[in-house]
Amino acid sequence: MRELIARCLADTCPAPPEHYRIPGVPGDLPPALERLRPRQLVPAAVLVPIIERPAGLTVLFTVRAADLRHHAGQVSFPGGRLDPGDAGPLAAALREAREEIGLDPALVNPAGYLPNYMTITGYSVTPVVGFVAPSFQPVPDAKEVSEAFEVPLDALLAEGGMQLRHKRFMGVRLPFFEMPWGEHLIWGATAAMLVNFRDILRERGA
Image (cartoon, rainbow, N blue to C red; front, top):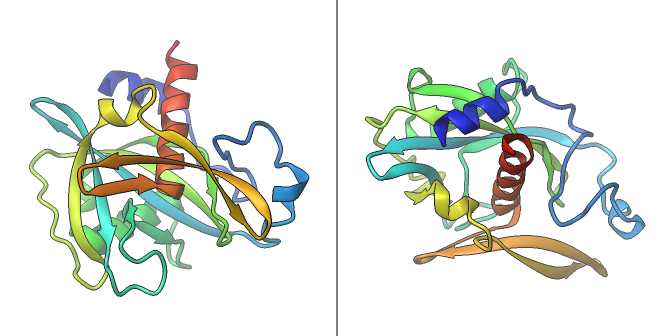
């Protein structure tokens, strides 16, 4: 699986913020959804940390602190908006991962980029896939992260693992994905990025 990921993402590069891929919405945004698209998208980046364990590859997730202003308590990847000093999405993702879970960038071997994902809050998020040394032990910053946990990559990419749901937002029916894992629920933007990841491996690995 590691070789497949490396091969499928080897030639990828960050896309401009206005280029994004929303799973569950084929092609261009329908007019109803286009009305909700922010005029100015804020560039952001997350790290999708893949760790090689004896039983197979796992993905590391964080749980956002309960007292954060936005998305409190939600499962997410380490990441945030690009700062002026960041050289690009990779630099931003690595910086945020160091700040949130104490991940030394030297322990990360970047594999490539997934398509941007546009959030309804106006962010265009670039997921950076990276292989993390198995020696890494997360040290969450309690101000931002309450917990870090791992899920087998095979479970995340399996057919039927992510379930398509719909919700209404400002009168528009929006698609989203979710997957329960133990006491956690992986959903929203984080789940959508994993669906894009799964689909790219299928498209390019065929």
